[in-house]
Image 1 (tube, one colour):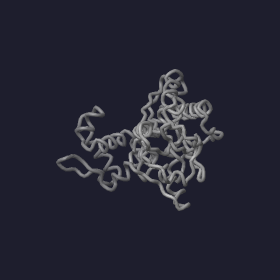
Image 2 (cartoon, rainbow, N blue to C red; image 1 turned 135 degrees about the vertical axis):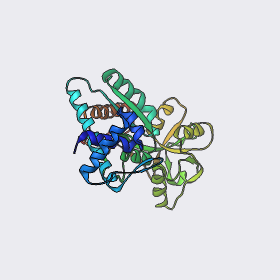
Image 3 (cartoon, rainbow, N blue to C red; image 1 turned 90 degrees about the horizontal axis):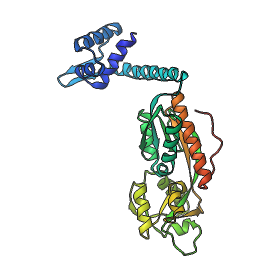
Image 4 (cartoon, rainbow, N blue to C red; image 1 turned 180 degrees about the vertical axis):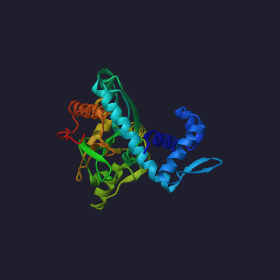
Length: 309
């Protein structure tokens, strides 16, 4: 199969129009149409349905686009790795970060990459863990920090950090040093919605003890929850890492949970494809920064890093 024609087919499929694709790849539209016709003749199948609004993939086209995605992505990765052999990696990558971790992680990570690897451009996306898994599978992020748990077989992950779940509230002088499940049941809470990992974990553990959470407000925003508990009598459940900075500043108080004690285990994940030199640099930088943060801010220490990446 002619790789140039495969790239032309890929461009038309992504653009949904011969004219738009021709403009994007800088080729005359009649020439592009001829190349696609020759590819269809070579394969003996129609690849596009054409109508007044553009083009749509036929069943044969749907099969070919999956192959084309893999081939074109692979060729770009190989080209980056070959270029990296001659010097510093030059690449644009997308990193997914949990909102609860972004405040602590991003500044030192960006500084490190900027100083040591100026050829790497990083696009950062924040999302909850479930959404992040979808972004990984859809190829919209290259690397992501997610919570460990059941993952699709296409995802490759390695352990990054075990972080304790705490009751977070406004600092009070009431002598309480830890919070049991029975105490937690009596506290008014602001929590993320039920599909959030910490909410699911807490409710599962409490239900097993015939206890329940008193959730007064549901808000899927970690910064908003932190502001609310800092200024009201509401409390919430977050990992210690999500509030370490505010705890050190005296703005929030984080009390360990007992009976049950809860923790979230963070992992560094990719979509199961072999990653190149630039990706490995970002992976190692994330691991190193997390390790340093865990030691300096007294988070639970990470396990020895595996070599999945």
